[in-house]
Amino acid sequence: MTLSALTQFYDLPLRCFTFKDFQLAPTLEEYERLLGIPLAKSPPYFPRGITLLGPRVPESKVLRQKKNRYGLEGISRASLEERLQQLQREENWPTFIDVYGLLIYDIILFPHIEDYVDLAAIDAFLGKRDRGENPVLSILANMYYTLDYYYRKNGKGLRCCTSLLYLWMTAHLFHDKKQQVKVEWVTRLDEATEKTIRWYLQWNERESVIIKCEGFPNIPIMGT
Image 1 (cartoon, one colour):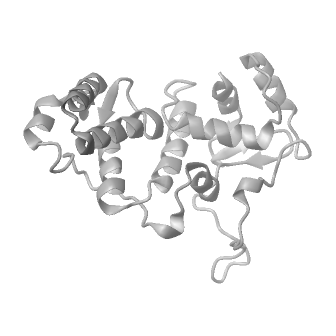
Image 2 (image 1 turned 135 degrees about the vertical axis):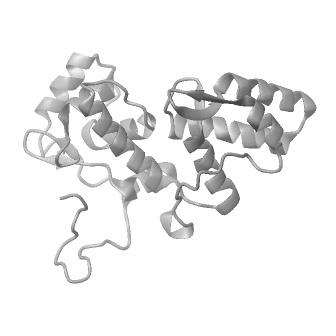
Protein backbone atom coordinates (compact mmCIF):
# COMPACT_ATOMS: atom_id res chain seq x y z
CA MET A 1 0.00 0.00 0.00
CA THR A 2 2.82 2.40 0.89
CA LEU A 3 4.74 1.68 -2.32
CA SER A 4 1.55 1.91 -4.34
CA ALA A 5 1.28 5.50 -3.11
CA LEU A 6 4.94 6.18 -3.89
CA THR A 7 4.65 4.95 -7.48
CA GLN A 8 2.15 7.71 -8.21
CA PHE A 9 5.08 10.14 -8.00
CA TYR A 10 7.38 8.22 -10.33
CA ASP A 11 8.58 10.34 -13.27
CA LEU A 12 9.24 7.96 -16.16
CA PRO A 13 11.21 10.35 -18.47
CA LEU A 14 13.51 11.43 -15.61
CA ARG A 15 13.72 8.01 -13.89
CA CYS A 16 13.11 9.50 -10.45
CA PHE A 17 10.35 10.44 -8.01
CA THR A 18 9.16 14.01 -8.53
CA PHE A 19 7.52 15.74 -5.57
CA LYS A 20 6.30 19.28 -4.93
CA ASP A 21 9.65 21.07 -5.06
CA PHE A 22 12.30 18.36 -5.23
CA GLN A 23 13.24 15.10 -6.93
CA LEU A 24 14.62 11.96 -5.35
CA ALA A 25 15.93 8.65 -6.70
CA PRO A 26 17.48 5.53 -5.12
CA THR A 27 21.22 5.39 -5.74
CA LEU A 28 23.70 2.56 -6.06
CA GLU A 29 25.52 3.73 -2.93
CA GLU A 30 22.32 3.70 -0.87
CA TYR A 31 21.38 0.20 -2.00
CA GLU A 32 24.93 -0.94 -1.25
CA ARG A 33 24.52 0.18 2.37
CA LEU A 34 20.99 -1.16 2.74
CA LEU A 35 22.12 -4.61 1.54
CA GLY A 36 25.43 -4.49 3.43
CA ILE A 37 27.43 -5.75 0.43
CA PRO A 38 30.38 -3.38 -0.28
CA LEU A 39 30.81 -2.67 -3.98
CA ALA A 40 34.56 -2.19 -3.66
CA LYS A 41 35.13 -5.70 -2.29
CA SER A 42 33.54 -7.79 -5.04
CA PRO A 43 33.01 -7.64 -8.82
CA PRO A 44 29.54 -6.74 -10.10
CA TYR A 45 27.17 -9.51 -11.14
CA PHE A 46 26.42 -9.90 -14.84
CA PRO A 47 23.91 -12.49 -16.17
CA ARG A 48 25.49 -15.57 -17.75
CA GLY A 49 22.42 -17.67 -18.41
CA ILE A 50 23.54 -20.55 -16.16
CA THR A 51 20.68 -22.92 -15.42
CA LEU A 52 22.16 -25.44 -12.98
CA LEU A 53 22.70 -25.21 -9.24
CA GLY A 54 26.14 -26.79 -9.28
CA PRO A 55 27.55 -30.14 -8.15
CA ARG A 56 25.60 -30.24 -4.90
CA VAL A 57 22.27 -30.30 -6.80
CA PRO A 58 22.36 -32.94 -9.59
CA GLU A 59 21.46 -31.82 -13.13
CA SER A 60 18.83 -34.56 -13.42
CA LYS A 61 16.88 -33.15 -10.48
CA VAL A 62 16.93 -29.64 -11.93
CA LEU A 63 15.75 -30.82 -15.36
CA ARG A 64 12.87 -32.81 -13.86
CA GLN A 65 11.65 -29.81 -11.88
CA LYS A 66 12.19 -27.14 -14.54
CA LYS A 67 8.99 -25.65 -15.96
CA ASN A 68 7.95 -22.88 -18.33
CA ARG A 69 5.51 -20.23 -17.14
CA TYR A 70 4.56 -17.14 -19.14
CA GLY A 71 7.51 -17.84 -21.43
CA LEU A 72 10.01 -17.97 -18.55
CA GLU A 73 11.89 -21.09 -17.51
CA GLY A 74 12.28 -21.81 -13.84
CA ILE A 75 11.33 -24.01 -10.89
CA SER A 76 8.17 -23.84 -8.80
CA ARG A 77 8.74 -22.59 -5.27
CA ALA A 78 6.72 -25.50 -3.89
CA SER A 79 9.14 -28.07 -5.34
CA LEU A 80 12.11 -26.23 -3.82
CA GLU A 81 10.38 -26.08 -0.43
CA GLU A 82 9.71 -29.83 -0.60
CA ARG A 83 13.37 -30.37 -1.48
CA LEU A 84 14.33 -28.21 1.50
CA GLN A 85 12.33 -30.39 3.89
CA GLN A 86 13.90 -33.53 2.42
CA LEU A 87 17.41 -32.11 2.85
CA GLN A 88 16.61 -31.21 6.45
CA ARG A 89 15.53 -34.78 7.18
CA GLU A 90 18.72 -36.06 5.52
CA GLU A 91 20.80 -33.45 7.41
CA ASN A 92 22.44 -32.50 4.12
CA TRP A 93 23.24 -28.99 5.32
CA PRO A 94 25.52 -27.74 2.46
CA THR A 95 22.79 -28.37 -0.13
CA PHE A 96 20.12 -27.18 2.31
CA ILE A 97 21.90 -23.82 2.55
CA ASP A 98 22.09 -23.59 -1.25
CA VAL A 99 18.36 -24.19 -1.75
CA TYR A 100 17.44 -21.93 1.17
CA GLY A 101 19.64 -19.16 -0.23
CA LEU A 102 18.02 -19.53 -3.64
CA LEU A 103 14.56 -19.13 -2.12
CA ILE A 104 15.70 -15.94 -0.39
CA TYR A 105 17.01 -14.58 -3.67
CA ASP A 106 13.65 -15.28 -5.32
CA ILE A 107 11.28 -14.17 -2.57
CA ILE A 108 13.16 -11.04 -1.44
CA LEU A 109 15.78 -9.89 -3.95
CA PHE A 110 14.52 -10.95 -7.40
CA PRO A 111 10.77 -11.68 -7.17
CA HIS A 112 9.15 -11.96 -10.58
CA ILE A 113 6.31 -14.47 -10.81
CA GLU A 114 4.54 -15.47 -7.62
CA ASP A 115 5.47 -18.94 -6.29
CA TYR A 116 7.95 -19.41 -9.13
CA VAL A 117 11.77 -19.20 -9.13
CA ASP A 118 12.87 -18.11 -12.60
CA LEU A 119 16.33 -18.62 -14.10
CA ALA A 120 17.29 -14.98 -13.53
CA ALA A 121 17.15 -15.47 -9.76
CA ILE A 122 19.04 -18.77 -10.05
CA ASP A 123 21.76 -17.15 -12.16
CA ALA A 124 22.14 -14.24 -9.73
CA PHE A 125 22.39 -16.65 -6.81
CA LEU A 126 25.10 -18.67 -8.56
CA GLY A 127 26.99 -15.49 -9.41
CA LYS A 128 27.21 -14.64 -5.71
CA ARG A 129 27.84 -18.17 -4.46
CA ASP A 130 30.36 -19.40 -7.02
CA ARG A 131 32.10 -16.23 -8.20
CA GLY A 132 31.54 -13.83 -5.34
CA GLU A 133 29.78 -11.35 -7.63
CA ASN A 134 27.92 -8.40 -6.13
CA PRO A 135 24.17 -8.34 -6.95
CA VAL A 136 23.56 -4.75 -5.78
CA LEU A 137 23.73 -3.22 -9.28
CA SER A 138 21.30 -5.80 -10.68
CA ILE A 139 18.86 -5.31 -7.80
CA LEU A 140 18.83 -1.55 -8.34
CA ALA A 141 18.49 -1.92 -12.13
CA ASN A 142 15.64 -4.39 -11.65
CA MET A 143 13.90 -1.88 -9.39
CA TYR A 144 14.02 0.82 -12.09
CA TYR A 145 12.93 -1.64 -14.77
CA THR A 146 9.97 -2.69 -12.62
CA LEU A 147 8.96 0.92 -11.93
CA ASP A 148 9.04 1.62 -15.67
CA TYR A 149 6.92 -1.47 -16.35
CA TYR A 150 4.52 -0.56 -13.53
CA TYR A 151 4.14 2.96 -14.94
CA ARG A 152 3.46 1.76 -18.49
CA LYS A 153 0.96 -0.86 -17.30
CA ASN A 154 -1.00 1.69 -15.24
CA GLY A 155 -0.21 0.28 -11.83
CA LYS A 156 0.13 -3.45 -12.49
CA GLY A 157 3.12 -5.66 -11.81
CA LEU A 158 5.35 -4.07 -9.13
CA ARG A 159 7.67 -7.08 -8.77
CA CYS A 160 11.08 -6.10 -7.43
CA CYS A 161 12.89 -5.98 -4.09
CA THR A 162 10.07 -3.95 -2.53
CA SER A 163 11.47 -4.21 1.00
CA LEU A 164 14.58 -2.24 -0.05
CA LEU A 165 12.50 0.38 -1.85
CA TYR A 166 10.32 0.72 1.25
CA LEU A 167 13.33 1.14 3.53
CA TRP A 168 14.82 3.74 1.18
CA MET A 169 11.57 5.72 1.05
CA THR A 170 10.91 5.74 4.78
CA ALA A 171 14.53 6.66 5.55
CA HIS A 172 14.25 9.81 3.44
CA LEU A 173 10.64 10.84 3.87
CA PHE A 174 9.20 9.64 7.16
CA HIS A 175 10.27 9.99 10.75
CA ASP A 176 7.61 8.08 12.72
CA LYS A 177 6.15 4.57 12.81
CA LYS A 178 2.45 5.43 12.75
CA GLN A 179 0.42 3.04 10.60
CA GLN A 180 -1.40 4.75 7.75
CA VAL A 181 -3.78 3.84 4.95
CA LYS A 182 -3.00 4.55 1.29
CA VAL A 183 -4.86 7.89 1.25
CA GLU A 184 -2.77 9.12 4.19
CA TRP A 185 0.46 7.99 2.49
CA VAL A 186 -0.47 9.87 -0.68
CA THR A 187 -1.26 12.99 1.35
CA ARG A 188 2.07 12.88 3.17
CA LEU A 189 3.99 12.33 -0.04
CA ASP A 190 2.08 15.14 -1.75
CA GLU A 191 2.91 17.51 1.12
CA ALA A 192 6.61 16.55 1.31
CA THR A 193 9.03 19.40 0.56
CA GLU A 194 12.78 19.81 0.33
CA LYS A 195 12.76 21.06 3.93
CA THR A 196 10.88 18.10 5.40
CA ILE A 197 12.86 15.22 3.90
CA ARG A 198 16.19 13.82 5.01
CA TRP A 199 18.77 14.53 2.34
CA TYR A 200 21.65 13.12 4.37
CA LEU A 201 21.34 9.69 5.97
CA GLN A 202 23.84 8.82 8.69
CA TRP A 203 24.03 5.18 7.64
CA ASN A 204 25.19 6.33 4.19
CA GLU A 205 28.08 8.44 5.47
CA ARG A 206 31.17 8.15 3.24
CA GLU A 207 34.80 9.15 3.33
CA SER A 208 35.05 9.53 -0.47
CA VAL A 209 32.48 11.30 -2.62
CA ILE A 210 32.39 11.47 -6.45
CA ILE A 211 31.90 15.09 -7.56
CA LYS A 212 33.05 14.97 -11.19
CA CYS A 213 33.71 12.53 -14.03
CA GLU A 214 36.87 13.00 -16.12
CA GLY A 215 36.40 16.20 -18.15
CA PHE A 216 32.88 16.89 -16.90
CA PRO A 217 32.48 19.42 -14.04
CA ASN A 218 29.67 17.26 -12.67
CA ILE A 219 28.47 13.66 -12.84
CA PRO A 220 26.51 12.93 -16.05
CA ILE A 221 23.55 10.62 -15.53
CA MET A 222 22.95 7.95 -18.17
CA GLY A 223 19.73 8.46 -20.06
CA THR A 224 19.52 12.23 -19.52
